[in-house]
Length: 133
Image (cartoon, rainbow, N blue to C red; front, side, top):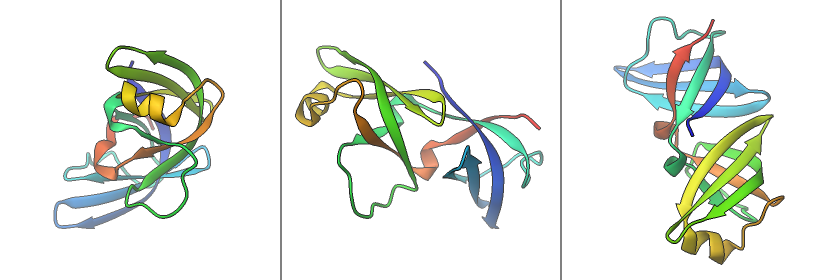
């Protein structure tokens, strides 16, 4: 499963070749760090963002500060436990994403369908797949 998120570019900060891009994802703020940006990526543009399932960490009953830029409050739709890994289908703002974590972590956190958890994604693990408008 490819994780894609459609979001609106809200702000771009650049120093030399480093860019921090802030997005609005249906009312949820997201941040992305990038070394290169297409000239089509401008404030107001709609983009399709992507990330790998293994880049989405899961926290249960999370509180406090963390350096991860992107914290999404999600609901678990499906749990598929394998021998070593667990695939979670999670939903945020009407978008379904996949997170792949270790089976040990899934068991330790006692994850179940219907649980509300926090999905964590570092800014450098989000990228632009396509500029839509």
